[in-house]
Image (tube, rainbow, N blue to C red; front, side, top):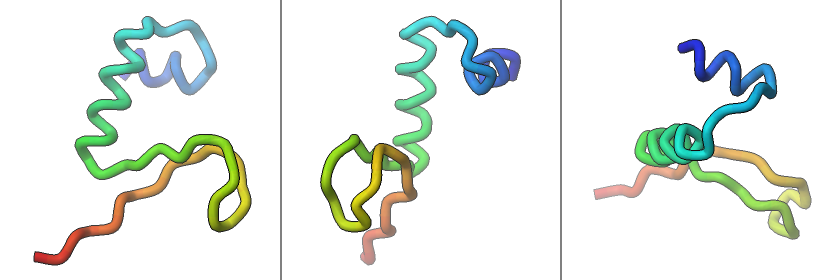
Length: 54
């Protein structure tokens, strides 16, 4: 929990730790949106992936 708190405060966190956090979030259904043109015309962000039916 201390690592996440440091990350949220903008403090330095190891790149491998950031990669691990991203992998865990993506595994939980989070999709990261890069900067650029897309529907909604906004900047980078994150959203939950839609559930696939089946």
